[in-house]
Amino acid sequence: MLPLCANASGPEDAATARALVSSLGRPAPARTPFAEARFMKMLDKPLVVSGELAWLGDDRLERTVEHPTREVSTIANGEVSQQREGRSPRTFSLKRAPQLQLLLDSFVALLGGDASRLEQAFTVQHSADGADHWTLTLTPRDAKLAQTVSRIDIDGSGNEPHCMRMQEADGDVAIDLLGSYATRMPATPTRDALATICRGG
Image 1 (cartoon, rainbow, N blue to C red):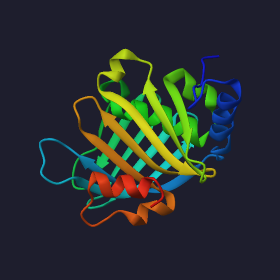
Image 2 (image 1 turned 30 degrees about the vertical axis):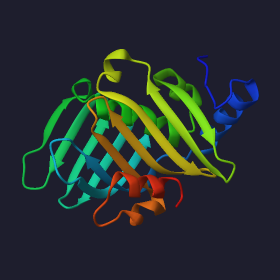
Image 3 (image 1 turned 180 degrees about the horizontal axis):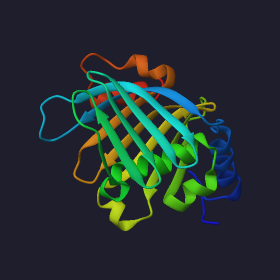
Image 4 (image 1 turned 30 degrees about the horizontal axis):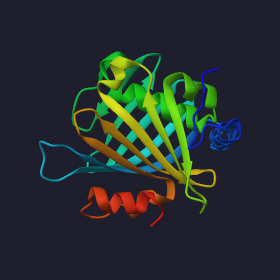
């Protein structure tokens, strides 16, 4: 088994991190609301969308955007199917979408409570601030995927993830507020404001 790192290198800390991942597991289908702000260098303002993420079991993931326009993306059997409002459906290989591959690997492993799967796809670091808040930092093991996404940070408390930050190698970042935190997306989000929310502020 690949090592699961923690904020210290001892076996007790690694065991704590694995126990945390196991506690996040939910039976499929598992659904959670999300609100995402994507900060891109080419845009003055972030793109904000909201909807629902659903793990349907095995390697099947569905991302439904309800606002501002409806779009459904389904990942299954190594393919991505997208249905956008007012457009014809399209299907393409998951290999063409590294961000979706990493979303699948991380989200399925977390909702499945599968620490082993998480370890296979990522180097995992765990830290906690002593006030029930924790952070998992996931670094892709696949060098090609890491050229697109440098890391994913997941914040939460207890057995609930609240925030997922996907840092792309080119400097763009997508920040998702999950579950009950999805309603806390500011009307005009900034990275600093979302960082405060992710820390439980």
